[in-house]
Length: 232
Image (tube, rainbow, N blue to C red; front, side, top):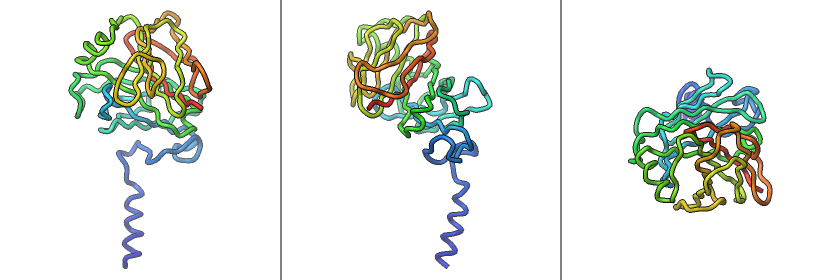
């Protein structure tokens, strides 16, 4: 009787999930979870190192707007994307306030870069949104005046941390390691503020060592570009 109940429970859970569009676990390219597509997943969380998820941020594949997802309460998102070395995902902030942060509404859009090598590494794609209340205090506290005509480039590092470089002109970078932001170019997260958008792209690299996920990425005025790299 116990065996029968267990089998029935497994059958019932075969259809469990967040909704009908979500995958259930981390998988790499072409393993069947997304058919022959890549499974692109990660998190979007609040700017402060509090692990507060951003709910209902919308992720849309730029070249196929039928592929879209809303982030869960913990900030997790999941998309099946056509295999390519790099896929651009447009990120629209939610229209409601965060469930656990008090930094104001998120209003700045984003560009998430889905790099196939990083996807296949199984490492976490992570990005942060900053509320408008905090936007007006955080950067001035670090001696930075934001230029709305320029971009912000957010680089999340997995694996070995290296000094991160960005080829387009920008203000001195800020880095987050552990619980505090400070001036610097090496950390779990590095942001290049007031990045020049004249060429439409910047090239992300590392100052020493090697990393996957580097290369040319798009930039746009008043927009975050989100990149994840994996150092070795």
